[in-house]
Image 1: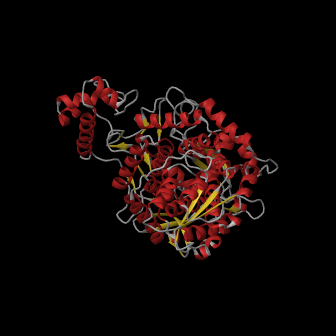
Image 2 (image 1 turned 90 degrees about the vertical axis):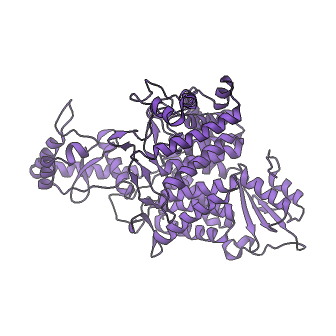
Image 3 (image 1 turned 45 degrees about the vertical axis):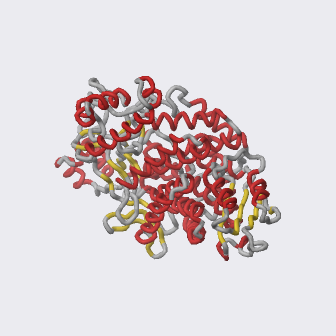
Length: 631
């Protein structure tokens, strides 16, 4: 529409004569995007982008749609015709416009009504799993038909479900999908990082745009999958995501950029595709031919005459053995070949980089990097995460108010629920990886601000926009997970964790109220609430708080800490330090016994006797649980 209509002189003149035109960046103003997308869905039965809304000066829509051709064709009204006719209607038939506007307003109000009479139980959780299983693609992984999205928070739900219900099918669904994503063309095998979605069932042909939030959420899920399975490939993909993000998507001062476009030189995917002669010119005939065969790069191509590198149906080890090659030597050759191809690709014209730094998406990447840092015992990732959080604190907090975005020194828009909830996730992961009490203190402060700004005092749950944000037609409350998990679901999960880490029972009360508020929506569509279901599932476990008054050089103590940090234990909440003061009131009086490292283990509001016997502490923490211990 930009090329066809908005850059057209005649369309521009017609618009400017009859309307006030407003262009909205939906990443900067997700509140506007969310409400008017809902309006479009109600008025037309579908939504999508581009989103075109015609509204009264009171901001109430009377006409909505997605794509319109410039001139009418194939039964679709043309944008030119719409502009002229709607203006005539507005001038000559204002009663009809007002009638439509009133209907829209009433319909929006009804969307805010919640069924709070329903209670959630294990049945809801199991139903979500079975609905996901029914839509699972057992051949290629993923869910439903093309286009296929990665859905990392759904995969994280399956991992948690697999752990607490000992369900092998859930684990297989998650790991098969993660393998399929890593094999497919949706993954950049040369420069790393994932594209937004696949246009086909196999995850072969992506929409080549790379988004920070997708890579952040996938980093979390691959890391969790490694914690559960110890599959080295999941670690490799997680580390490669971080290589891509820190190399190509990090501001020199620390914040992470938003996205890279799909197009370059006017063609989608041009930057990412190859021809066999290019590969062989760079790698030589022998290695080039092997690389092309392994990565499906052929003369006829797999995408518009060119080839997207992929490993669908291939295993590198098996391939090497079939060719009679020494596996380790071949793996080393392929790694060197990738580097050569990457360096050559860097000479191409790169896709446009969206250098907005969004607080919400940075919160997710900070959380992912902090989780990966402790899982893989690599402080380099902590450095990148801390650099990013410092950037947010320096540039995106104004008068104690979190803001939405930074670009080239300009900061815009007061933050929404997602900004607070996702950054809260980042702070909690940073604490769990570093045990720096300042991160827990900042998490508490942020959580309290989130409650003050967004909590619905009458009906409970969090509004998307704050009490001090611009007031739109309604203050929406969302629980449904899209490409991003909803702010309410992330808030519920992180407030539950924060309650256990700090002993602040008011946070836990808010979590239960969120469950009650959205119970009807969750029960109606459980597989669309997989992040919320993680919070519900976790709340039904025996949650443990482990407080270690520590001695850094104690080998057994390190073993306990590493077992918690490097394996998949969402129900364990670890505090490590010497003093906890008012940040963690329940542990403020805890101290070493007999001058030795001491472990306090609490569960279900009761505590075991504190102990210096670290073998006994290990049993208290991991009883009834299969644990992989990393010395």
